[in-house]
Image (cartoon, rainbow over the protein chains, first blue to last red):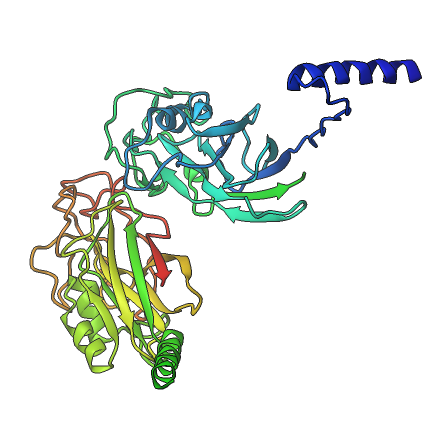
Length: 234
Length: 233
């Protein structure tokens, strides 16, 4: 143990001599070992709907930007997620510092917890998105929630709204919905709706007057869609 | 000495004004996918005034706005009450997903903010905010607004040109151009004749017949229908 320490000092001395190039300086400088700083957040997502499973949740830590904006066109990455539940492109968000993805869909009434770790709190935002899979292009989530002021064990609770990516008409037609209600097509690059993100007008369903709909009354939803609890754990 | 006393006095006056009056920056976003807002009225008023109140009958002025989008009687009412107002900040309709911005200087005592605009196409639906207390602390605040029903006209969901006058059945216009014709009419009665949360458009999937002229995949909405961002300077 003693020997080990000695050799360490010799190595450190040699390094400091080599670094400063000053042969008269015999002080042993112990470099300060920086505390490894990391900040961790757990994000609990509860699916509040009657019959809309959520696609694997995408959680993104970032300093700037938005995953979507009401009144703007969806990014291709958002469209991919909102039409087919595939969050892989969304997780490549250009301003992302750290990301996390749920490993499975979250069923109605179910809950999941994701974790994300960052090395700085400055200007830190969290965003989250998931598709209601028994819709054409409906999604929910949180856009750029500031978590920079959260202390350890402090939590923020949010209830989310339903959004419409505006990239696929809400036909509810057989073959157009990727979720278990239909098992139809997910992403299709054609954009045949208003091509602007808005709040979702809701699912109509066959029983409520859309004769070509493959959905039924249990697929209807109202706001809010999800309960999200963000807790800083470290 | 005299000058410094004067400037102190001036500062005191400014400070007391900033407590009671406010400079507001306002941004209103239509969150819906398929509903237009008619000209918007935003007022700052005292705690006695209202543009509307839930569970109370609509005033004739509110009815005129909610059935046809005509703001004039509400503006006259607000003017008479000494309210501060931003009338028609979007200079016409506010289309789905779009926003309008305006500023409002409030005077002493006008500490409450209210908003109305008709929802098209509806019979007497409107987006509303009643008497939101304006914060005294500078900052940016977000308020979500719901869709209300004035309770003054049966929701027959029939688009009838020229039906915007109070008491005339029908929806005066569907600005998105995506409504139908030939509907039989959903209903001719309205049991709740007080202002209430709108039950939503029903619509149907037949644009040339059916009960409603509205489309059930285009003209429905879920609350909230608007987002108001208020920056208190």
